[in-house]
Length: 193
Ligand SMILES: [Zn+2]
Image (cartoon, rainbow, N blue to C red; front, side):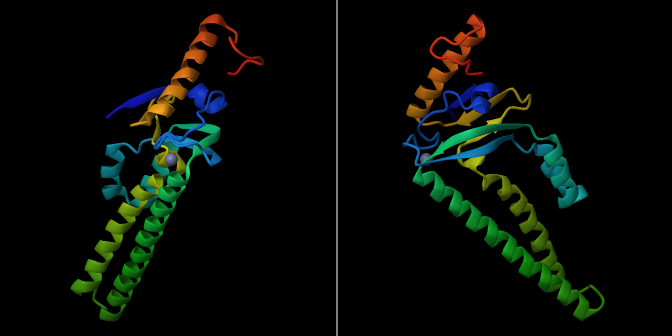
């Protein structure tokens, strides 16, 4: 998998942001203010099974690294991908809600909590909530753009970027490097970073 690593100040400043989307390399038809976030660590996924979804989600929010950006480019295919992800996410939580209601109602009606079907429904509910919490991060614009903040919070990584996006972000990185080494912008004033 090809990964391009971009210093966080380039992403956060918006200076040198490509005019094409990262995923498809197509000209942007919309730009959005968004926040790139770090990955949910694997140990937290396991911890979810022990401490439950609420605490796990709270920890995920507390430990994640964020890099905001003012106007990130998206093409129509990106927008379509985001829509599909959000529809799937809504469906997961809708089915989880139905299973949860069936489980609780079944246990209340059975009275002893030993009935197999309601317990099975609650297990399915827990698994769907688990899947849904994973899908929440996938249904964000930062994930559609394939951007992940590194654990140290200093860079944003883009997975499998389109070559044109790669070329444009490479130019922004080169100017950033020149600015950092020369102490002033080479091309334009005011200072871009
Ligand atoms: Zn796109």
